Image 1 (cartoon, rainbow, N blue to C red):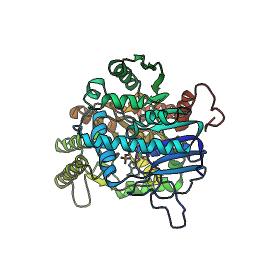
Image 2 (image 1 turned 120 degrees about the horizontal axis):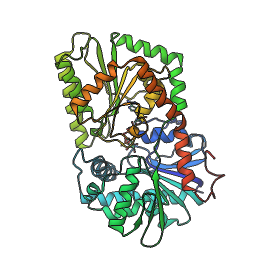
Image 3 (image 1 turned 180 degrees about the vertical axis):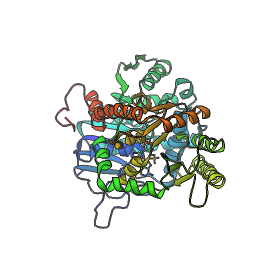
Image 4 (image 1 turned 90 degrees about the vertical axis):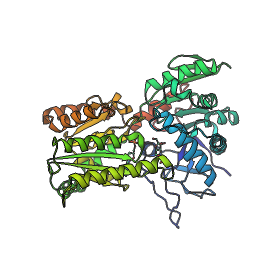
Length: 473
Ligand code: ADP
Ligand code: F6P
């Protein structure tokens, strides 16, 4: 008999490895990505079911519960992985939703597969949701699930949250299947975004494409059904990062890292998935020109770039990796010396403690995406700096910039501006840095991941009928 839950989270990825140990034991895998990082904390201790893909191909593995969280895997075939995940999700929607910094690819076969996989996710969800349950669908991979699910189970309370930006109408209008996609998302009772502008964009599109009556927080569809919308900026487990960064072993490791880097005057750090939205190439150009112009010296200023490979079978990601590695090699060849690299380039995934040690080692954290839904790395850095030191250089085009206004904000497309801002951050007075960091830390304390989930789920359940069943009540 299928076990059912009063809260079901549906996301493309499950947060655990697809090859659980032979004894059935399995542990949370913190895959490098904002979504699983964010949801991990909330669901670890919640009686809920997570519906998602376990990362492999072929039949879904039987996966054990994780504490009180049940896991319902969804299988993907090789063709589905290509058409749904690598194709429509990551070669059409991902670039389109990130300002088309890489041209979106429109392939008609991918759409068929995307629909079929969204149907499968909706069916799996319908099986595990209790009568009247709350279902929280996550991100652009599953835009059609709210509508399919409503058709299967009209009794459910359905939420949809988009972790990535929602583009301006002019860009969204390029999408051949724009009407179906919009209808799919608006199958939810509440559609949440990272920034208010996204809700505004959807309201405009709903009026134009669906003849809906729209405001920035409510859309009334032609059939009279009402969909609420709003901004719910996602966050991190602030307490976890703070306590990690405070651990004596992490403090010791941070000192060791600094020694290993040759005790430079300044360490500049970036931590990204290897993605063209993250602005890594613009950043490398800025470093390279600062070195060329003699405004920084390798011995004084060391750059650490963590760039964990992502979506490696997608052409644009492979090409990006080649370009970045070529450029890192060129810069190191030109400006490094024996035992003194200009850029320490690391492709590996790290555990949370090592990330905390890296954050503590940095004098300047450089987070300069060309477009980003939120960027949790920026928030993790702030949470890790309980010494009150360190500068954050942050792109205006990251959702985090709305909240972390005391960062050194920058337009990453403006390479001269980026160079100047990097220098300003490197040369800032300790008192100025302390004041900025204090203000950002204060903000994060009141806006952690629990606050995010509580705000979203309370808004979803506006009638209060699920109040006692939902987590974080
Ligand atoms: P995105 O969701 O686009 O990947 P975010 O910055 O919002 O970007 O989230 C990235 C998450 O992945 C963060 O929680 C970060 O700590 C984690 N992460 C990034 N790089 C690594 C790495 N090399 N090893 C482990 N975790 C990583
Ligand atoms: O935060 C955006 C996002 O696409 C998440 O949905 C996803 O978990 C993360 O980036 C990492 O990407 P992927 O799941 O493709 O490895």
